[in-house]
Amino acid sequence: MNSRARIRGLIMGIGVTAALATAVLVPAGYFIHSYRNEAVKLDFMAQINASRLAKYAYLNEDIWRYQLHALFELISLREAPQDPVRKRIVDSAGATIIQEEIAISWPVMRQGVDVIVDGRKIGEVEIEGSFRSILIETALVGLVGMLLGVLSYFGACRFPIRVLDRAFDQLEQARRDVETHAASTQYAYEELQRQN
Picture 1 (spheres, one colour):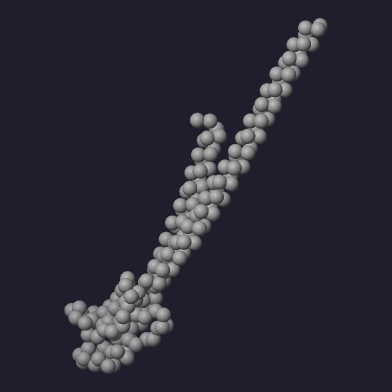
Picture 2: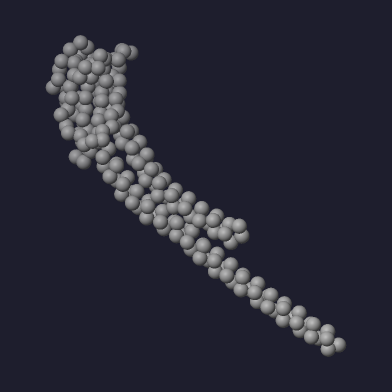
């Protein structure tokens, strides 16, 4: 394999790697970041609700789980309208005490936080939210990532190969010119030797 083919192969490998990395890593990174942010948001909401419920349960001891209206008020932190969440309180046995009847689009992520009173678990607060918007946004970012991948392929591969081919062609032409010049010089030298 000649030098030209090896260098072309190396540049093609770099270009394809850069394109694939851009097309895959940009949307994957966006998805991971957005998913973690949503999980942290839901976990924070669950912690707030669990803390409020723990204080209420501490003050109302054995009857807290039967005061449904008060429990609904405790967990009714209002969210932004574009991000509906469904909240649920379960007891320590896993039985549902209350659950908000809010429709959540599939796919759903869930975060739960234990409700602790006097060192013992009396229940759990679960918060569910959809991450469909994250998937849609990731798909859009994926399209941008593919566009950037194509651009990086041309930037890291096609353009340098064109420049490389031009340089090798000029080098080859210069070699032929030197060989022609060397042959004519040799011929002139031989003619000069014959005349002497």
